Image (cartoon, rainbow, N blue to C red; front, side, top):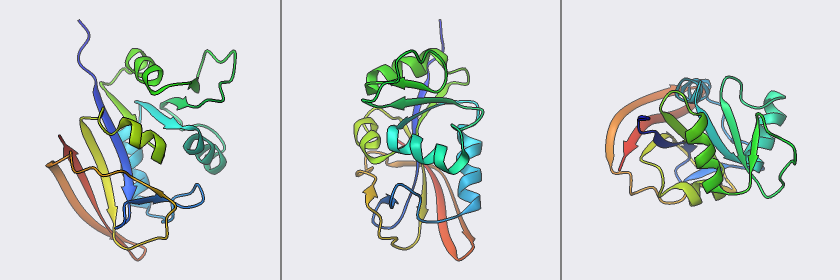
Length: 168
């Protein structure tokens, strides 16, 4: 019998729950990038098309050493290998559960995906960045994640932030 797979979300937000501006993250916190990489490396990551496009624009390729699954209405026919393109959140979850080898799947953005997935996730990895950054995309209310299992504050490059892991 296959062990149960944990479904998680990972995100960084400002004080207004802003997550992005012009399809980019509006702050540059190396520790947050390291946190994201440490948590998601080796896992299946599910994202929306805009998030995928911004990652490819930034890195020049999909996220390395992760199984990239993109939810989009613009299906690329004939793609039977990574990155995977699927039409629905249910297809993405089903695929992620089949290919995940380390026991945890991550939703990594953007807003539409977070809205659709927030009630499916059992765990939330959140970086709370102090300040307001005039964002145009936002995380929905996450008050359903009320049990804190980890918290650590930090400061870098003029940014103050807190890493938290929350569960339902």
